Image 1 (cartoon, rainbow, N blue to C red):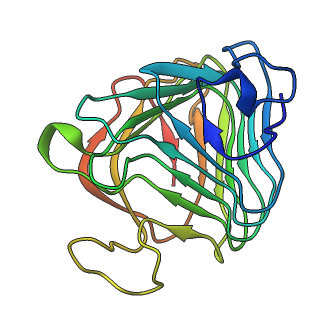
Image 2: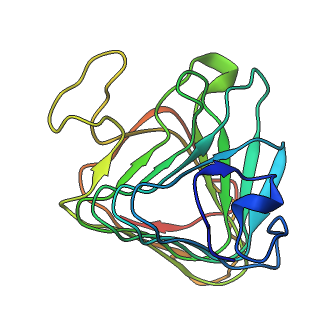
Length: 193
């Protein structure tokens, strides 16, 4: 599935084949500046790629704890591309079953929210995963080296690892200087930091 233009995830007209992506579909946002808002509670895809300059995937405004599932890999590769696990105020939940890559100049933000609405990323699956964040990527806040209540640079809300691969480690963490704001949950994970 390729995004045709900015729009809501749940609208068939947002997508090139006129259908809404499912957990079996690969999704690419590759037109510069397009913004897609996740507006249905348990949306997702197989692979997710943000390859257009300044493309953005984020949640629509909602007071519920919504989640987005990516069965396989996440790749935010274009300069200025953003994967926001929030709706601007409330944190949301992303579950990733494959590798996770944030490239130079791209942004991943899951630090927003308070109490039950804090951004959360979960790494799951049954094989070893790579988490790779380029040193020139932005994690959390949009302003480098600035930390305020609304702009927390190099911070993620909650990190959860439920990967069941028996290898030790089963998450290869290639991301320096990342801090965790609220919770670090590793019931079955073994992380190499």
